[in-house]
Image (cartoon, rainbow, N blue to C red):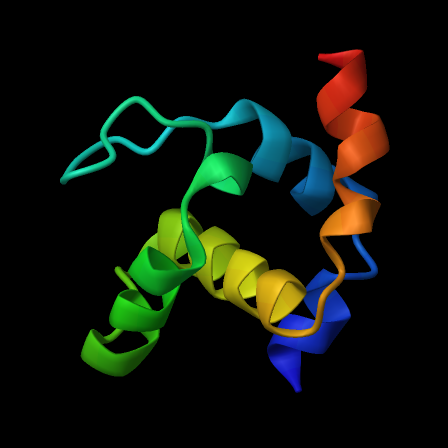
Length: 78
């Protein structure tokens, strides 16, 4: 599964705590701060194409599986 492989890439985790949502209701929010219901909505409707979609899908998997603790040390360093 591609998303589970993404979890092994530490650079993706760093991007999740640095990159801001570029559009929509949560424009300007850091990706890791997006609420889970928003990610579930994207999951049902389809993630955007490209890197943003891959990052949102990865974040969805992280939150779905209760792995937010992986992001906290990185978030605290930023």
